[in-house]
Length: 215
Ligand code: E4P
Image 1 (cartoon, protein in one colour):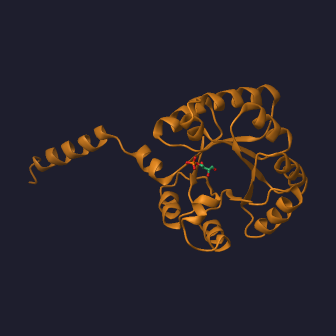
Image 2 (cartoon, rainbow, N blue to C red):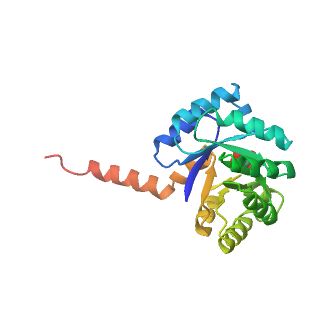
């Protein structure tokens, strides 16, 4: 499973990239708004740090305007992927953009039929939001399993980005299902690393090391 960082914060992205486990980045308007800088400047900096796909979201809701915005965003860097919301006009735009060779990430996916339509429209990626489904007592991870099965059944090439991840269990479950990508907030990446038994083990080894005669 590929790991993307779900962040627009350059410090977080640099630190995560330094771990050597990050394959790409996803941003959204909420994440960009937290940075208090123009979106273009943030995206340029992120793309200079990461060679993998960097998702940048359009804000237009009409297919012609989505395409125009997408073409502008694509000029920022070769690794920009255009995030398009899963609405009728969005699907129309994805079809046009895919014919132009512009990669798309269809976002705000909450159901299997929506994911099927994203794949049929030619999306490079689809992002089902599992945490937000869990929030309304629908099982987010079950949706990933259903999408994986159907994409396999029909040989759809669209990659599944498990999004709205809230905890390490979400990541483990996504990997068990065989999701292509998990996009993970920085705080959860840090949680993935830590285990109390690792800390206890290190403390014990260091204590025991002190007992070793030096000569
Ligand atoms: C995905 O690409 C989105 O940026 C993100 O995962 C949304 O997560 P949230 O539900 O925690 O806002």
